[in-house]
Each structure stands twice: as C-alpha cells, then as structure tokens.
Amino acid sequence: MTEVAKKWIREQARFREIFESKTEKDNRFDHFIPLASYIRCDESREFVKQALDAGCDGGQTKKFEAELAKYMGFRHAVAVSSEEAALHIALRLAAEKLYGSTTGIAAPDGTGNQGALSGKRVFCSNLTTADLVNPIVFEGGIPIFVDSSEKNWSMDPEVLALAFEKYTDTRIVVMNHAYGFPGDIMGIRKVCFENDALLIECAGEAIGASYWVGEGRPDVGKGIWAKAGGVGDYAIVGFGPEKMMGPSGGAVLMQDDYEKQKANYLASGAKAAVPWNQHEELGHSCRMGELDAAMLRGQLLHLDETIVKKRKIYETYHTKLDGSMAYIISAKEETKPNYWMTTMTCESNISFIEVRNDRRYVYKDVHGTAAPMEIYDVLTAFHVESKPVYKPMSMQPVYRNSEYFTLDGAWRRYEDFYNDTFSLRCDRAREYYECGICLPSDADMTEEEQEKIIDLIYACYDKADLNRQVWA
Image (tube, rainbow, N blue to C red):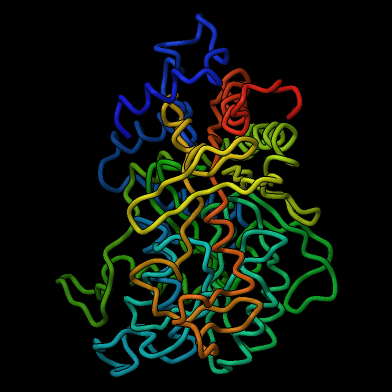
C-alpha cells in the first residue's frame, strides 16, 4: 500500500477521534505494533554470552534439547534449523519404521532416487503453512489435504476417517494445532490407531498449550493434561520471528532411544563415525546452532508467563469483538491454548464484498460490515501489523491438483468439478481464509494500544460514524 493510500484512510472521518494528541504521529501509532514477536529476556542474553565465550561447542544445543524434552514430556529432543527440517526428519523416521528405509524405497540400502515416501500418500492439514507440507513432496510422497473442523480450526477427525475409507493403505498423518489452539487430538489419535497409522503432531504454533487426555482412548493414560505434541508418535516444533520463541530453529521429539540417535545422525549430515567425511545415507546438515539454542533456552523459562499475557489479549478481543461483528477462534473446554495468535472471521447480518485472486484483492465499503482485507488495510495505515488467515494448501497454485477431503468427501468424486457452477457445500478451511484475519497479538502490546486497535476495527464496521457503544 502506498503512503498516499495510507494517508487517505487515516483522514477518513470515522477514524479521526480514535487517537489523542499524546499518542498520535500523523494520526497513527507513533511506533510499529507487530503481529507477534518472540520472547526477549535477560536469561537469553546471558546464555548467548556463555555460548560466545565457549566457542563452537559450548553445550547450549544439548542443554536446550534436554530442557525442551522435559518441558514437553518426551525422553528426547533433537534441535534443528527449522520446523520444516524437523518435519523432514520425522517423516524419514516414520518411513523407516513403516517401509524399512529412511533414504528411498527404490533402494532401501543405498541413496535411493525417489525419496523415502516414494508414491506413498500422507494425510495432512489443509489450513497450514507450506513448511508442514513441502517435506512430504521432497521425499516423494503425495499430500492429501484434510479439512478443518467447525469446532476448531485444526484437522477434522471425521473428515480424516472419510479419507481413510478411500485410501486404506495410508500410514502417516501430519496435523497441526492452528494458531496455538489445540485441535481434537484425541479424535485424530483414535482414527490413526484404528487405521494403523503414525501421527506426526506439529506443535510449533501451540508450544506450551495443553489438552485433556481422558479415559477410554487408545494408547493414552488416564486423566492428565498433556502438552501439545504429547499424543503423537512424533512431535515437531518450530521457532521464528513471529512465533512464541525465536528467532529461528525447530526440533523433533520422540520417546525411542534409537530414533533419537537416528535423528541426530540425519541432522548432522549422515556422517559415519570415522575420522574422514564418509556418508552412507543422505543427510541434511541442519543441526541447530549454539547461539539459537542459547536464546531459546532463556525463552523457555518465560514461556508460561508469556502465555498468561497472550491469554489476556485474547480475552479482551473475545469480550469486545465476538458476537454480532466477528467470530473469534474459540478455546475449547478440554484445551488450554497458548493463545499465540488471536484470529477472527468477519461476521454480521450484512455480507461483506471482497474478491481475491492469487495476487490481488478488492473490496467494497458497505455500511454495517467489514471485509477482512479492509481491516488489514486500515490497520496497516495506522502502523499496525495484521495478516490474512492461512490460505489453504488446496488453494495454493503448487498444490491445486492435489486431492482434498471435506465432509462432502473427496472432490475428485464429483463429475462436475471443473464446471464453473460447481462448489463444495462444506469447505471450512476456505471459509476461514476468505472471512478471517489474524489480529495483533504481541505479548508486549499495551492495553491502551489494544483498545485503540479494537476501536479501529469498530470503525471499519461503523461506516456512518454510529455510536461505537452499540458494538461494545
């Protein structure tokens, strides 16, 4: 957006009274308010200093692995350079367990040439990022996307069961907990157990969140709160500039001693234990560096208190916005989210008008409602970061020909799919994308700043400068 366009938005009458002189700079926030940012603390600075003083191998990575595994309830953690790398290694461990090779089905005892998942289907969440899908393709697998639940924004167990009905030989499921709000993990676990499939639980967005692990489910203890990631056969987490912890890195967690050694081996370039560089399998060379591990060690100490701050931000949004104007992503009774990102869908009795293609978007100002990208533009104009909800993987140009399951079944079953009038009756992930927006959820945001952001959102709906108390 150009500066002229931003200024034109700020000068509209509906926004003029929101900012007072003591906080305004050209009628906007006097500093940038980020969508989210990682924890900054004195302990991280101290650990980084220790890492710099110790040199290349000061033990920070190993200490972080031990501390992360303990926090999440696993025996082992292997820290790597990114969440994508963590998933890649988890997929290779699963492939070895299921198919006998981590390097390629075409040549189990060699380098392979088609990947460890060559020709194998993998069920994965549709409302997610490419980092949690691309490694499947890199290993020669075929991603099959599973729709989100209407109860939460994560994978729907009922849709997963439909997918297994068609592809009974699928043995791997990759699911995420969208925006830090745990999905129906026990339902997903049950479907995987019934179909003899391994579950890779992606907890990068939900690190620190918990869910209730009750009675009557397979492979699970009685009546405990488990950390997100704790029910899957493998758990992966990721760190980044906008995540709860950062600025970069990831980890794969497991219970098995051999798989921990294998993951370390693969992440270290698959180098044989000899003095010279010898490789007997394809490796990744993606071990986490000492400085990243040092920063993350300090942040882990403050994760729970940051979740408390995030919860307060979420509750304020929920109290002020949920209802006639918006639907705020819900926190279910059997879960304790980490509230990483508060998201909402634009709802009102009047439908908004917005059109997007792969590169552009347009919307129309309509009294009494607001389009997601209208809110995005307004917040941008006032120096506030927001973001559209994830564009589903089934809508991405690179994956548009991949199969996609909803409660209606697989779209390939429909003879008229390529007819211009065809539409799925149930497509939750698409609905969340087309109606949703991620709201500023930075733990350092003040109450005053959040109130002004909410006022800006009110004003987007309030085209005729109606009394904003009506919406409160």
